[in-house]
Amino acid sequence: MLHRSLIGSLAAAAAMALAMTGTRADDELKYPDWSGQWSRTGGIQWDTSKPLGRGQQAPLTPEYQAMFEASLADQASGGQGNDLRYTCLPPGMPRIMSVIFPMEFIILPNTTYILFENNMPRRIYTDGRDWPKNLEPAFSGYSIGTWLDEDGDGRYDVLDVETRSMKGPRAYEASGLPLHSDNQTIVKERIYLDKANRDILHDDITTIDNALTRPWTVAKKFRRTRDPVWSDYDCNEGNQHVAIGKESYFLSAEGLLMPTKKNQSPPDLRYFNQARK
Amino acid sequence: MLRRSSIGSVAIAVALGAAMAGARAHDEAKYPDWKGQWVRMGGIQWDPSKPLGRAELAPLTPEYQAIFEAGLASQAAGGQGNDPTYTCIPPGMPRAMTVVYPMEIVVMPETTYIMIEYANQLRRIYTDGRDWPEALEPSFAGYSIGKWEDEDQDGRYDALLIETRGMKGPRTFDASGIPLHKDNQTIVKERIYLDKANPNILHAEVTTTDNALTRPWTVIKNYRRERKPIWFEYVCAEGNHHVAIGKENYYISQDGYLMPTRKNQPAPDLKYFNQARQ
Image 1 (cartoon, each protein chain N blue to C red):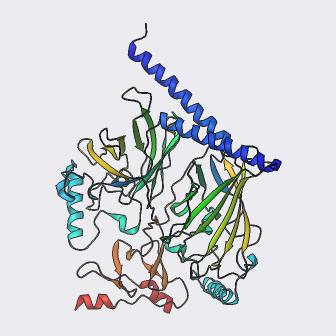
Image 2: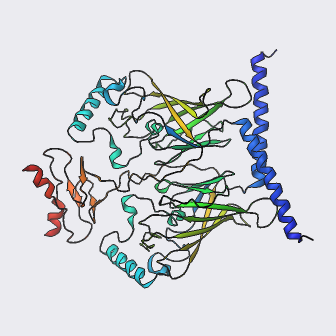
Image 3: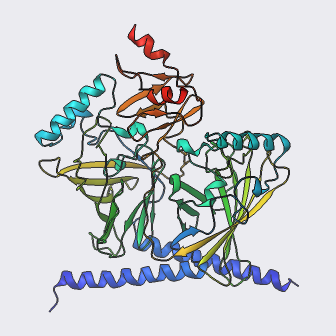
């Protein structure tokens, strides 16, 4: 005869297994299957259909086009231009959706999470909330989403997202394409699976920003890996870039400070002279 | 009369609502409710029941006690000692579970996710029955396998048992620089469960087995639930005034100049600037 506790354990295990199957079936009926690991297709430029830099043909205002040109000139001389990622600041929105390293979605009724290997998660609130009155600015901003069942089959297929309240500095890509310093950016996204290939995810991203003459829409695509291996990327680990004041330097392999531009001044060591007195 | 599209929309909304309610009912029947924001109770030291530093009484081997003492001496002189997090690298496991800034736990059938605001720490706890991979890429957070337990046999899980391996360093237990062994062979076992008397308190019993220790070291962490959380974005690199150059730690002044962090600290060697000028 089976021991009573063993029978109890088996019954509980059976009940849990049934409940688990039920949950999965419900979820799969209601939300799209975005499980797995999503990797970018194309390069790290903002509009992946065009080359990085001037080739993006970003609709910048004259003022911000001039800033962009200055950034390109600085980068050409060895500097970092407007791209402050070398200090390990997060890319923020919308650039984070370039998905340099892969991402994962977790879909819950009230929140969709986008997890990145090299950034804080994005939380997209889908619980019907309105915009909070006092929003603390964040590089990733604050995102509210709406699920849509566009084909009317009883299952959601599109997540519409609006993101506000970003902080800076932010650029669209490594070339330093700038966003406005007023950080009034609004980003609208439409995320959905490709109808012909369920292992391709689309994110149509429209950025409205005062550095632009018109809303700028780009289409990002991501490819699914169903049995992923996740890596732990941390920008700060082994970052050889050093920012001192407004200058960026580089650390040599033996740990010495190096210039990044021709004739770059070394850092001012005035506080060391004082300390030695 | 309602238009056909409106009727269709209402029907779909009702169907979706029913399905959503069903999913929630199943989830709540099976897994514990760990929703919300979890905020640490107590300080940032490893064992919150004891003071930071030597008073933690960490069971270190003589070799690692000496390393710890050297770290404390460095900190007393203005240095950072053994604590590497001033360079904004993540604290890693087990220190991540000190939860300097709040965490969220998302329980899914095959994975439980622990997201910690501080230093962008994301832990994936795999509960799909997998075995340890043959080749593990070391990471600060390590690789975690978990198992749900229904300890009171009421048909609902109540404890998550986790084992974490595959860490990389440098890591310390807390800001005082209590070291973990540099061989990174650490194994961390956790038992996470809600307080039986107060479901707004979460416990994590964390046992660390490490070659810097003479025995496994168990501490109990407690977290308090905030049911209507506001999440902040903490970015260590934003406004970090510490600068590591070679083996030295310097500081950036408010006006953007390099400063020593201890008395008579040598200035950085600028020989590459001299070469560049030649």
